[in-house]
Image (cartoon, rainbow over all chains, first blue to last red; front, side, top):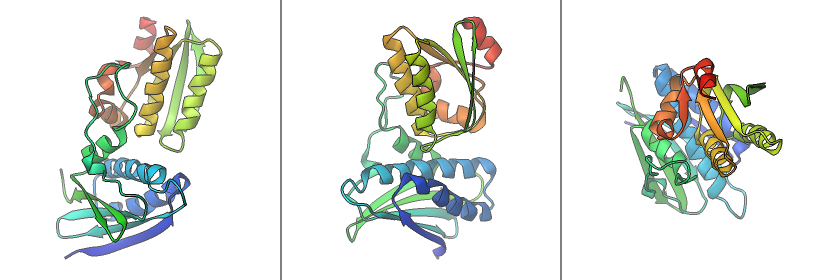
Length: 140
Length: 110
């Protein structure tokens, strides 16, 4: 059974990063994750939110809603925006072997999201982007 | 984020404490750019007090390195630990930058 723990909705602005992070990390802390896992969740969250704030609403301002949920074995951070469709899971990974000249500036954030959590899910529903970061409970 | 800078040999040593995230990365990058504008070419970033870095911080370092390479400059890094070191490894930055255990060992390279 999925249980909603927390809910926060704020304008899609980078200035709100701290408020979102604080809200999600309070929930994650209550799940007794170890410090390293909390830091990984924090990084994945920042990368996902920065993407949404930068790309989702190119024309008019919008909002991002975050729901923290748990089921029997997972902690789930769900981010919902009503901006343009953007499936981060479809992006290819950066070339990690490239040197300084060849190394591209983009793609790093999404790559870090994928590495920091156990699973990233995206769906487009009712003209909304729904991005879920799924973290297994207990030790990794 | 707290930035302290000093000059030793011909290098600018930049010690960063706290966090380089999407909110603080622009200030960090500007700090580096300002030194480049003053004709500084060699930088040593001491990250021993850095607790957190996100892709915004990594991009600042990469952008600055690209800029420096064109003008025969370079960036060395020292003192990475914990989550910061982890992020450098995962992103492949560990292999494209010169990283030293401590500021002292990095300074010997300059």
